Length: 129
Image 1 (tube, rainbow, N blue to C red):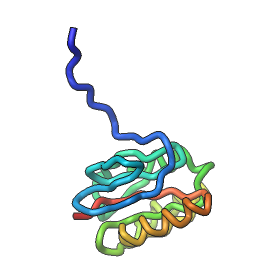
Image 2: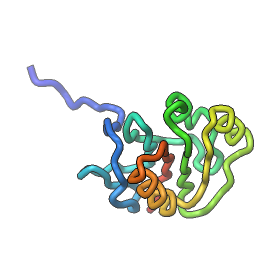
Image 3: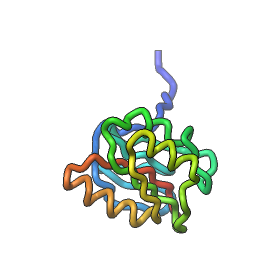
Image 4: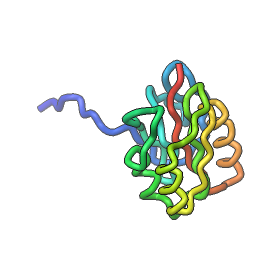
């Protein structure tokens, strides 16, 4: 019997540099993903924050689950730099994670450098067109 198409959550099980971004997605590890992503110690995950302009701890639940392996969280906020809400900064600080919001392009470049240095880095990257 032929099975139908199986839809799975987007997940690449490994750490990889981001090769390109734009057109609403990202390229990494000879693959592409349309939409936003979380780059974590457990791999690269598809991500859909509820409101991109006001991230919450719920939006970053996977980051918090892996907090023991993360020292720095780069947050690519799209094309405009926005501060993270104070409540979110407080939660990240409680988990001993330093957060740094910046444009998505700057976050991708910084993530690649810190990843190459084998640092305990993670990134939450909002896709840009």
